[in-house]
Image (cartoon, rainbow, N blue to C red):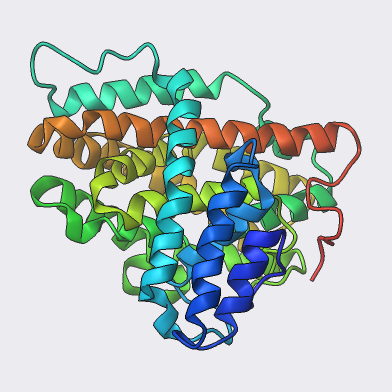
Length: 353
């Protein structure tokens, strides 16, 4: 993807370094680490900080498709890895704090080891609890969203959906047995069962083209607010750190459990504007697929992982509740803008290609 525009001193310093060659200016890399440490003391809310979230997004992107014009050797540069770790520590701490309100009622110290069905039951309870609270973007899309709001909705989602499944795939080599097999089964569907035209990212790209939007990955990174980047950074944080393999399993489980009904509503909203099956296929596919995936992800992936490694229960729940916490904030941001007749995108951005 094209390198985005900086949003503050940290992302500006990072993008300037990435424009050069690894190890060509060691002093600049050291200075950036000092700048990051200093700026973190000035950040009130790292989850919604434009500068920090963009910097993290760019650092993580080095492990995916990379940034246009950036040397691939930067991916494992020790100084950048250190900077990423310095940013990740307060980010993870803030996520744990935000997620705590969603899982405060769950007993994470059971007398008996939990079975996989017990773990799934906890996750389904969290999903049900979330479905009836907060502003619903899905309900708004189904009944009231304008065509321009549908475009904005796709732009927010494009930051992840155009590389859908990739962050969770990092967990495959970190799992064993039942949990690994479950994740591979889910991911095989996400990647179209071997057919590139049926990959969910490809289906989403067709939906974007149907509304005259740019379907290139990262085409709208400069348009979306920090929270849209945060929702993807959470997945990368969990997926790229082996110690958080429980969190990425819980993340995917709750993601699947809270997907089927909203996608049904999204499809209704797009059809309400006369858009055809080629445009709604992405949503229609998820209504059926995620109804199956939620069972596999809850019982076999997350449940199977906790059966094999009981100490990971807390991180499974953390991963699940972090999704709910971040998604709730993003939904509130979008709905507050739409309810007040504003765009939910950044002021300088435009919703069209």
